[in-house]
Image 1 (cartoon, chains in turn yellow, brown):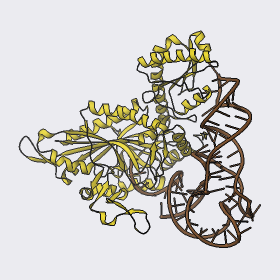
Image 2 (cartoon, helix red, strand yellow):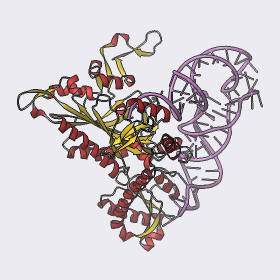
Image 3 (tube, chains in turn brown, red):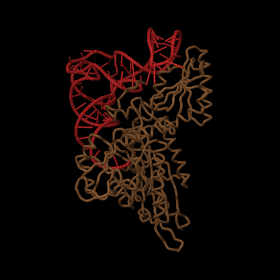
Image 4 (cartoon, protein in one colour):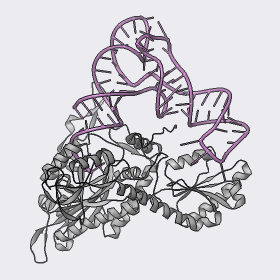
Length: 491
RNA sequence: CGGGGUGUAGCGUAGCCUGGUAUCGCGCCACAUUUGGGAUGUGGAGGUCGUAGGUUCGAAUCCUGCCACCCCGACCA
């Protein structure tokens, strides 16, 4: 395969697509808008899943699975939810194919029309709340804390690998509670888990906030989110956690009997992150050489590349390489010895850089003789000679340093691209020329938000949590405002 | 749905204007020499040129329809 190089600074979008393909993460399938996630990309997703799943379970959640298909009638029950999703639903109308007698082609059998059409889930609130009705009778049945790992389908007009595909993988948590307070605590707890995961595992700094009414999830009372800033200055919503109030309980008639024997509607939350996080990961850290993976997420944390000329050297070098690999594995590090003898060391260096492997160890006859190895880190491209005896205690430390450095770099970038402005001119200048988050006053109305979006292409990403309150004037209308909100152009 | 682009070997491409069944690179296979930053040589395999039709003695090339995908916008996670 010939690697086509595209510079990040020249064409960010082409660079991104190229990287996804070259790093072997995913490729376009022959199905419009759908991708094939390749083994290496899927391995990264599995690491994300494992980290998230552990956190979900530590906070008392259980996994379950609900159907892919949702009867159309379920969908019509929550009005704003329907409005939000109707335009992008795939619908199953028939259940059988047949061979056309004239053309001999496979066609949909018109006699096999479904009594009730089925919607391919774009999200599962409706089918889950329809199910919860039968699970919940008493306050003793609450809370219900469930998560599901699933695929969903949203018929988007325009797609982009990982960031927006017609079918995507995600997790969706759906919880039911006796009180609004408890549901709100759950909503915020899950937001905190997402933020912790993003910052400590993905090494991406995020801003926690609340969505404006325009950006709120269809059917939610309040949508909380984490927002990240990509290297091209565009924001990316990386996860959402919704306080659904009693909207779905009312739509699906889910009530419970309180301790005082009174029937009350149940309070709900839902929360999710998707394979979009793969996009966030790529766009936060990677460079012209390829992917840069934070060690805590890398399927391979250390690659060992043996270098040899003669057969006897190969034996000796591999022996050492395998023994070092064994030592590192005992430290819980994921190590691969790249002993392919049909690729040159130079090729392997480049390939593992492309794939974002955090640490590379090269070992040749010279090293064997000196009892050393060459250690190179992916994030800074620094190389150092290390005594082999130091590997065991220095490599775990190095991996941690890389994790921290990648995060710090992303944090610095974001700090340098977070602007506070007070006039419309400054606002546009920040968006057009500086790029990034822009903190500005807004009069709080949907109309103004719409107008700002139309004029600047920027949306309100969020109202940061614990936002500082200060009097000011709306950036567009000049009307009084009590706080700044975060704007950005977004994916 | 608008605007742009692409479709030729696994991948990337030349050829198209000016018709004569196809170029080059990477990859693949074999052998040899190589291996501390994407190795080299020699030999070899691989293509109904997206699809349907038309013009023509003859179409990758000209004409018409269709399809697919990508990119930019509107919609959205």
